[in-house]
Length: 288
Image (cartoon, rainbow, N blue to C red):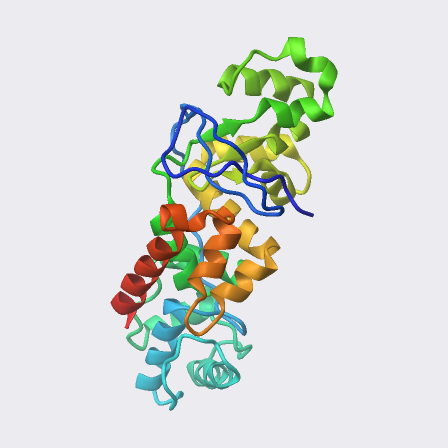
């Protein structure tokens, strides 16, 4: 399923700009910021397995090398050799040898000097694995494209009124929270699909899909933990966008193609590709 095109912008909040002509992408948009307190989500647990990529995998491979189970370069890609080495470690340590690094394997590894995975790294790795992209690329987009406020909501009345043209007199004018709530009372699903959420201003259609077409659950989750939901929405966008995933998975990511999918044909106006590239370079250098 594709979701509506976003208006492109570089500077944030309070005035709408003209929409991009590119289909299937979203850009940046100006809108109101709802005043929600930041919430706290449950602590994530690291799970690494076939297909995982990123710093956490490299950390695990390095540990396996110190224990004599892995004799290859620590590439950050959970390859078949990493899986076999993990199984050999698990068998030697006395835990179930399934080749997957979860909480139990991590606890056994700590007995042999492993420092463990931090919670934020665990969360990013889980999201990146679900999206099918390297964790460093996801982190680079998070760092470079975060708008500064995870509570951001951008309601676009014309999008809602296409589904409910007779509701024009029931919705206050403008991109306001009151207008969103009026639309939400009429149809929760359509109201979310006519709104862009979070630090990366992702269309609410992704939020509906994340919560199995239960829009109230999705909106409540956003109210409670906007920072967490912002990152989940970003990962969901990558998971749905094959071209963005392909660009992200190149040995050196194709930042121009990724930025094109992210912001539309005018991505270079805001140097989106350069922002993501610089963030990626800094992150990968720090993780070496």
